Length: 238
Image (cartoon, rainbow, N blue to C red; front, side):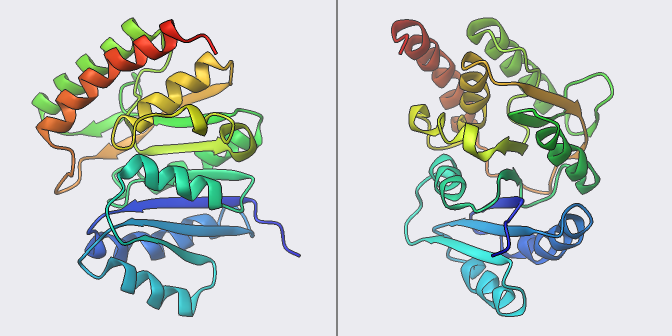
């Protein structure tokens, strides 16, 4: 029986057009990194034919698998489910718009191979190469400053959708994760550090996609989530 080394997870919600690019790009990148991989499309209640597209790809390549939800569960729940169902000893995920340049995938996975429990791309390190509006840049830096100040994180960019984990280690963190949507990325990094896990953050080349599913109400929600997680960490020392 072939052992799967890497599971790449792509969370999807009504992203058929992006998937048409992301699936072949993922196969190409992963094939240059490991001979044993699978791609899990965590499709969260889409209505644009995303699930059907993945099913078509699977008939051509059995390494591609669909995790479908009839109703939207939230990005965090979709990622939790995918990590639990993954076969790889290393699990990674990245945004379907491939905003982070895929040439960084080798470094992301190699960090776990080298013994780190978590690795994450960063848009906010001195050597990061990013393109996005000044308003979004200010909001991102302010948000991450609050996370570092209030939650004691040593990471600079918590929300970059480009992360990898030692699956066995991260499975022990998942039951504690409360957030089901965008704050999931921040919470898993903060809780991993509180657990004493080794986290590697490295600069990436990143370009903002043409569209985003992060809305202003999501930004305010994540601000409230920082306060909520602070309370959970300081009130409960389990």
